[in-house]
Amino acid sequence: MHRPQWITILCTAALVASSSIAFGWVQEPAPSPPATAPAQRAPVATPGKQKYSHLNDFLIRGTVFTDKALSFPGVQLRIRKAGEKKFRWESYTNSRGEFAVRVPQGSDYEMVVRAKGFEEQTRAIDAKKGANEGNLVFRMQPAAGGKG
Image 1 (cartoon, rainbow, N blue to C red):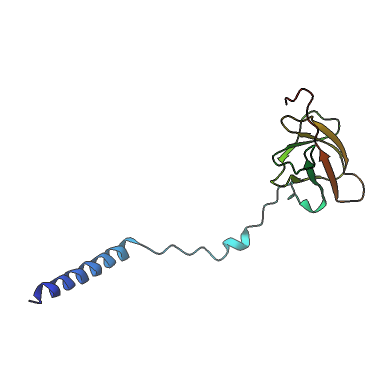
Image 2 (cartoon, rainbow, N blue to C red; image 1 turned 30 degrees about the vertical axis):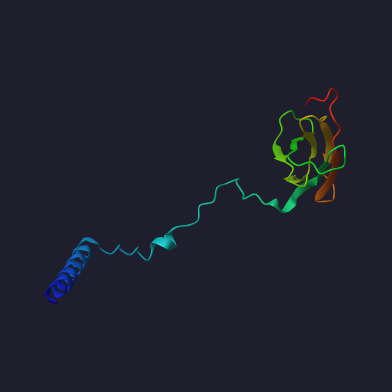
């Protein structure tokens, strides 16, 4: 009665043993690297290229409100250096109408705030002197004609 159970156990053990031997023959340990290899390698430095640090960035942060003084989520913010045509940074206000954008310090910037159905607003930002951040508050005005 108990013979089929013992036969199953013996066959399973034989199968496990043979597969482990087969895998042992196929797998070979990876050769260890020579001891002198790390000593010969010197770190390669890219000339003229340094890792950028946000330590000295200027933080532009603020809040956008509707004409009824409610927070305004989803408003588009675009920032460019003063005198340039191309916008370099773009962001949107969060669910509370707040925003924060880091830009490199030492330049004048222009921020354009735009929302559908409201007039576009532009502000100049001086990121050259002293402080590491600037706070802005925008109160959007409905567009003439009611379309954006």
